Length: 207
View 1 (cartoon, rainbow, N blue to C red):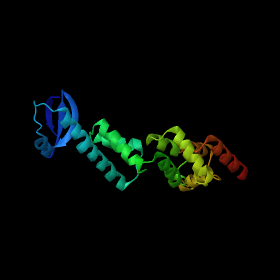
View 2 (tube, helix red, strand yellow; view 1 turned 90 degrees about the horizontal axis):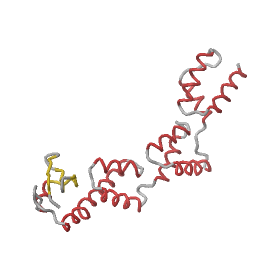
View 3 (cartoon, rainbow, N blue to C red; view 1 turned 135 degrees about the horizontal axis):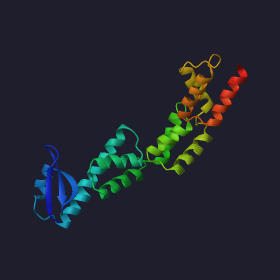
């Protein structure tokens, strides 16, 4: 492999290009340590040493440091490492390490998220959040099933009434356009149509 480019990123780091393709990021001190210069050949043994002993360890340490501040899903952590421009092999090895100790556990993450959000968000909104975080549909359904056994799932009717109260919605005085506007607002919040129909039907009976 030929070092075809060394691009400065900052005062301390550079991007290394091998055979005209981006390879990895190194500190400038590592260029001197491994004798890397533009136009020189990088031996397979040195390349493997950089991948295994330098960059994989760095990606793993980066993962551990990120996880100290808050939980991450596997997808979120992978995205962070991609942003850090680590080679794919190093990313996969780092993720395998943290998963082996359950520092990253998407099943547990999904259950914890449902438990923490069930008093704030509807089921549909929680599902959408988890999908955006990289949790699979099967994992989400399993997490809801596990939380349902413990009674930790959203009470959509209570949430709807809570949001109506926050909006100062008075069902006794609200006219049809106001009710329709509130219905649309709650639907956007993820409250199911069946729950909304029941609530508004009860309002009509009460008033």
